[in-house]
Structures are given as structure tokens and as C-alpha cells.
Amino acid sequence: MTDLSVDLGFCVLKNPVIAASGTFGYGPEFQQFLDLNRLGGFVVKGLYYDPRPGNPPPRLKETAAGLINAIGLQGIGVERFAEEILPGLQGLDTAVIINVCGNHDEEYAEVVEYLNDRDGITAYELNVSCPNVKQEGRCPAMYPDATYRIVKLVKRISRRPLITKLTPNAADIIEVALSAQEAGSDALSLVNTFLALAVDAETRRPALANVFGGLSGPAIKPLALRCVYQVAARVSVPVIGMGGIMTGTDAAEFLISGASAVQVGTANFVDPHATLNIISELEEYGRRQGLEKISELTGTLKI
Ligand SMILES: Cc1cc2nc3c(=O)[nH]c(=O)nc-3n(C[C@H](O)[C@H](O)[C@H](O)COP(=O)(O)O)c2cc1C
Figure 1 (tube, rainbow, N blue to C red):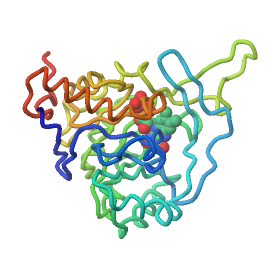
Figure 2: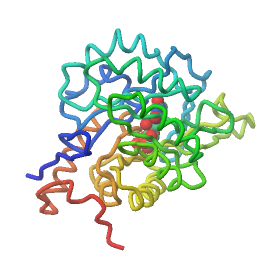
Figure 3: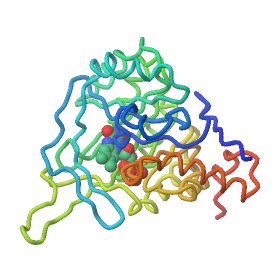
Figure 4: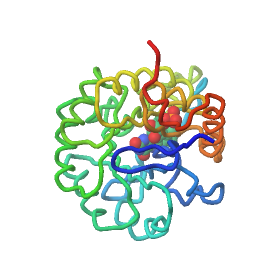
């Protein structure tokens, strides 16, 4: 048997498979399908301080080998999350990661400050990379200085490790990764979705009310692998890779490219058991390859 546990420095995951934010509800929604304790961890839907309605519909469009979404970070806000959802997550034996959002720099800090005293949280993932909220898909993670500012601000007040989630829509994702690391980020997760457009040729209108959306799923896997490889080669903090992972082999490809763990998003919509299947397939892959520990794979791409 291959030991599937991975050490991220600030915590040890029982396996490298984490359910990605926005595709797994706040966690409890998936309890009817699987035992959350079998996961390496899960990331809750993005949380602003206040509740948000998100964007108007239509907000989802399936494409060849992918999904374009413009949900616009609909959510219940941090106060309701802390009162109604978090108590139910506190007994879990898995990493619970909070995806933190903000309309401005200070809001990221306000969400973290509100949660600092609450139990049952492993780490914060700073969502500085959503392409579905501001015009033209702009977000802080497109810019090294904006990313640095937010990470630095939150780091000062956070009592938990910070993971900064990067966008592939940055001109130079390596520069942004280095800024996040310099500002004190304990790990990096990448990638968020690719800014995209779907067109209805009959009506000559965009398929989504928001015009633009973010592309995820198998269509983006080679692009995401490239980002993970480039970033992991340059930073010293652990990298959590994602983008189109549907199978254990996909997950192995991300580890080989430099990731220490992976997140699984769109696959959860295809099959709510996807994360568990990926864990089993990764274990089988490890056995086939004669690996003692799955962590041996990280960064082993032979160039
Ligand atoms: C419907 C939907 C909602 C998402 N919501 C969030 C979110 O709230 N916060 C976030 O950081 N990423 C969000 N994402 C991005 C995913 O977490 C992930 O980065 C991306 O989908 C790439 O992984 P995948 O190809 O495995 O889905 C969302 C993705 C989808 C498809």
C-alpha cells in the first residue's frame, strides 16, 4: 500500500485530494454522498463578509470538455456561515479550508478576523482570483502588487495558515506567485478558472448574462499543468494544483508537475463521488508504480 498522506508544512493531509471551492457547497451538502472524513480536505464556497445574491441567470454553460460559470460568488456571508454551518464541521477529521473573498482589501481581513476565534478551520484560501465579479474579469491576482497588499494585510491578523489562490489570467503568474510568497502566503493554490466567452449563434447573444465566465474542467488541464509546473519550479512554499482533474492519473500528473496536493472541482458535478474515486485511483497508481509514499511524486517531471 502507498502512503497517501502529504505534508503541507502547516498541516498533514491524509491524502492529497481536496474538493475545490464552489463545487462542493459548504461541505454538508455532500455528506449524503460520501464520508467527508475520507477526503484530504475540502474548501468551502467563497465567503464575503455579507451575503451576496451572485449574478443573474443564466450562469452556467457547458462547453466541449468544460464548463463556463459566472455564479458571481453567491453566498450566505460569514456570520451565517459561522452560526449555521461551521458548528457541523467542527467534529470532522479532515482539513476544512475557508475560501475568503473581498470587495476591497479590508474585507478579506474582516472575514478572517471574524473567523479567527472559531474552531474547526484548518486554513484560509484567499480567493484573489475570481473572474466573475468585476468587469472584464479583473481580479487582484492579475497583479503582483495588489496580491502582495492583500496577503500582507491578512497575514498580519490571521491566526491560521494562508493559501493564496492564483489566476491563470495574469500576464505573468510566476511574478504573482512570488509576490504572494514574499507577503507571507504559506501555500499557493492554482488555477482558478480561465476568463471565457460562450456565444449563442442563433440569438447572437452571449450564453451567460454576465457576458464573461470562467472556464473549468478537462478543457483546461494542460493549461493548468503548465501553470503549476512554472510556479512550483520557482517558489519554496507548497503548491496545490487544480484544473480539469477527473481521474487519479490526472491527479498524479499535477503531483509530478510540482504540486504537493490537488483540488477537484468540476468533476464533482459529473459525479458527486469523484473525489473518492480519484483517491482510490491514485492509490492504485501508487501501487502500480511501487511508491512507498505518494509524496515521492511531487516535482518529478523528467525534462
Ligand atoms: C460553479 C463553480 C463555482 C466556483 N466557485 C469558486 C469559489 O467560490 N471560489 C474559488 O476560489 N473558486 C471557485 N471556482 C473555481 C474552482 O474552485 C477551480 O479553481 C476551477 O473550477 C478549476 O478546477 P476544475 O477544473 O477541477 O473545476 C468555481 C468553479 C466552478 C465551476
